[in-house]
Length: 223
Image (cartoon, rainbow, N blue to C red; front, side, top):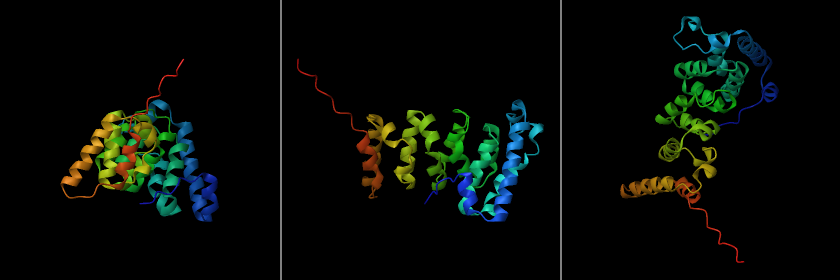
């Protein structure tokens, strides 16, 4: 379940053919035009508002990225489009709700680079309710690490273990697990349930559990 790094525009230009580069130039120009010429109060209208009955051209380009630039580069192209358009939560929600799994994954991978605060958390929460490992792996990136509360984040870690997503995909795993007694209890219970059912305990569980141990106390210095 490899997840290729997101490429910069310069890196994409070095790998794409001439037709694909030309298509990307046009797509990014459309996204930039939307960002410059759409009034903020219109850009943030709810999905059903008549002002957005026809999506801006760059959103149509978003769906076509794999066809024109190749599936290996689609996430990178879609991320660039979201950034160039300065996509807000309504646009992100439209693209996520109406998109394929690959299109949803690109939204999730780009959230932490957009100025949306915690308002896009419903998209992460939806991805974590699925059993699609592509979406789960994308959902536990930097945006989730920054915005999921402790309860949601613990369940996200367990979701990775349950679905087989490698725990090294969880951003800030060591920092957020450190000294977390409740996470340790949940992991121990999960391991006991798997063992009782005659099922293997995921290899990553012990790795996560190692972070949850309380920090050793430092004895006071003798005077």
